[in-house]
Image 1 (cartoon, helix red, strand yellow):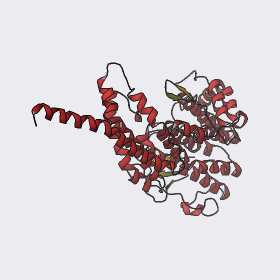
Image 2 (image 1 turned 180 degrees about the horizontal axis):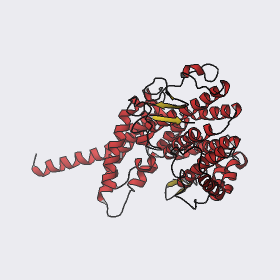
Image 3 (image 1 turned 90 degrees about the horizontal axis):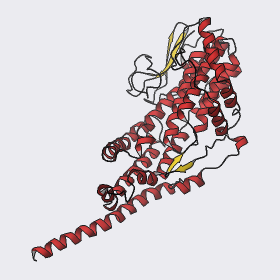
Image 4 (image 1 turned 30 degrees about the vertical axis):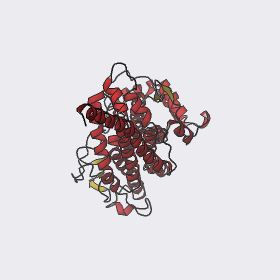
Length: 431
């Protein structure tokens, strides 16, 4: 064979491989998606729209949340203590500080009233529009978080002002925001749902023991936190990311990007198909991991999470963006474990306070004393599978999980919203 024919043969092989490679990868991707369709899960934006059910405005919790966001006003005094953090305030509170709290809460009274209109609504559906290929939700995370912190401050203010019923309602309003996000099919919404549940749990521990909350109110709040101890939200978020995966990769590397040979080659060589198949496969593996109890779900989710992180770093370095950039899927299972730890700790706070009411102010010696009268069983720690820890110090107590490092640090609770890193995860309750 002459050198010229040899070069032509090599070129023909390269062209043939380039033509067949995307088809082979497409078949692999189709196999992954087919496995998910067999479970009745959507795998395209159209299927996702059909999978979600519209909710009439009068019954839609999302409508009340959006009305509250529209009425929300940025606090005038952002330096007000305990408005921008949820650390333990003094008890009793100085009257001057309490007056400042009442002023800030009153400044957003209209937003709080709009939020309370959602009480009793159980269904939620945020309308989504597509702009430049990107699904846009009207839910504004920053404003909703600020509103949740105003609710937490309102709970503390009401508790210090001798209005225990209103203090409980304020905490339940934070859980309303979290509940509105549970059906949202994107992982970012589910990560914020975790933050709202943590905010409600911390508000419960900091505010309500200061007030004379009755048995019925504690039971109602205990049931609300028990409902938050659920994995449906994170599953729905992962399903949405799978269904929108193709759209996400289109945005990252638009075909025909003028003058960008690397982007064109990324598509035509089949490399984009390889990355998309890997991404969808990892999300599918995370969904499968969530079929197992914690902490097994954490262990089974480690490998796909590491693959997603590696892929995110590589694509972000090359394109400045990846489908993982805005979704936060690499944090999903660990964040959910932290959410379960807070929801279960808050459930136990309610049960412990109900025990205190029934036993003339006496704390239980151990959590098993609450079974079966107040809880069916002691909740497990999602990070190590052992019962949640209970530590008494006089009239105060701590309920906690060992956290991400699985080491018992003796109830040394980390800072608020630290993504479950650091020491233990849980709630301190004082008197």
